[in-house]
Image (cartoon, rainbow, N blue to C red; front, side, top):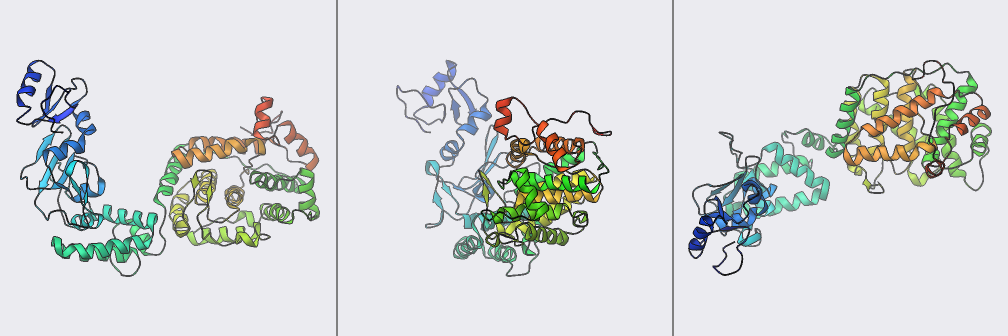
Length: 504
């Protein structure tokens, strides 16, 4: 950033030197250069100065405060504070202002060998242990100026993130390094406070924590804040939408059994448990278990056993503990023939579907508990059903069977309120999965709500009479087609002709 006078072109942004002063003066006179800060010039006459400083930020810092140590909040954030402040340890006494940035030096211990690391352009970066010690020192915000150090809540959150990403040993290592550094920096008081926070987060010492995440971890129920963000997005959209009520139609016992059968059939088909309708009917209604696929047959039979039981499907959770109990009990039933999937037991290893990595095992119960608070604040059975289905699907609390359990929980909310079920037929599977991904990956709940809403309208429109009659109607609606088959034929899921009264 200190170019020598030569025939070569000057850098886009540079700090002037004695050797360059005459060339800079001539460049300004000729309109080829312009100043953008103290001793800082650019040959770019078009872009805003703030953009140029941002583009060359650390090179400018290294040129203006050579050998400085990136410190305090900047050492943890590795970017300017909201007001543009960059905090460094340097012999320089006064702040140095650039467009959009203010370099704020302070006196302090020099870089510590074996701890602080070389950074770009001759700068140094505080080690993580030093950064936490420095940030434990109190500071104030005044006149719109950012605090030099992060708040207690911000530090707690970062430490919780560290446990989630790297486990408890990472915090123990951080504490050990801080103990080595504190005497050299005169940060013994800050070390004691840091030790108290770490011990409280690890559950080895009682201390007051200030963040919900910290208190949840201290109570033994840590949660995934990224998933809570997604749940909040869905919650907002459900609260903002017009209330939806689709009361279930009166059906005779055969119609109710047929509807429950197809709920179990399609829910298992989504997960790859695939039988023909006739084969599935033999399993469900005649208890004929094919010798080649007994586990698959038990999956569909036990799913049907739950969704056809009006007493079981009227059970909804009133407390977080009841939510956990319902999930375990229903999973134990559905997956009872698969001991290798640990029926009724929350997962002990992280699971993944495609690019989606679900909630870590140690965060499952805490995330479900945190999510429950949003669930019970929803006003309508439809909103609670959609929310609860996504909560279970996104947490993925079990080794296997999560999709089936999430849809059982969804429909229990609806049946308990006398409203129509939601079934995802085969032809709608890809749209359903894509809408879940839109919410999981982009925090966009609208496609998910649209798909679920249409699926409920479709269920309300089907007569659900006898098994044979209903199969024919579903075939005419393209319900059994795979998505690719439907696309090749230029068709999609359709409502049957002559909708029943009240279907909208």
